[in-house]
Image 1 (cartoon, helix red, strand yellow):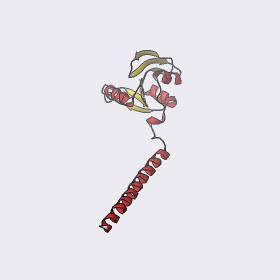
Image 2 (cartoon, rainbow, N blue to C red):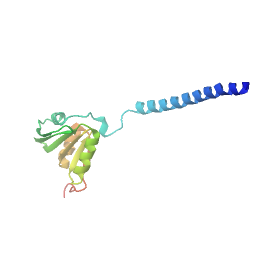
Image 3 (cartoon, rainbow, N blue to C red):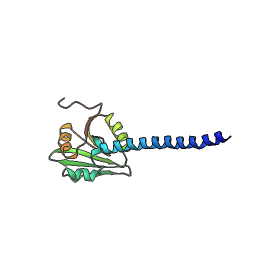
Image 4 (spheres, helix red, strand yellow):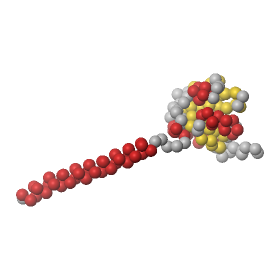
Length: 144
């Protein structure tokens, strides 16, 4: 029986050490990802409201939607006409964009925001706002 009692605690110590190694390994992976910085692309920009997006490019938008889940305004500037839309969640932006792209059009997409306009206007706005250009399935290619 004495040997049985001795093996119990040593298994516990081995188990604790194994758990410590696993936890330490997971922690180092998390630190490595965090040290790598943000994912390039959409998420480098801050999540801005429709009004903040418009102000950033010199427009005071005519707000047409102020709902709990999104805000949308229309801008008419020397660069062209466009619609700025901001969302309270990233999922809301994805859902909206999936629906909108079924009907075509061009969009500049950022973190919880979308700007809709002609491709040439979006190229100009992208210099200030950042984001990613996307064209809907039903959209006519530029120049057509």
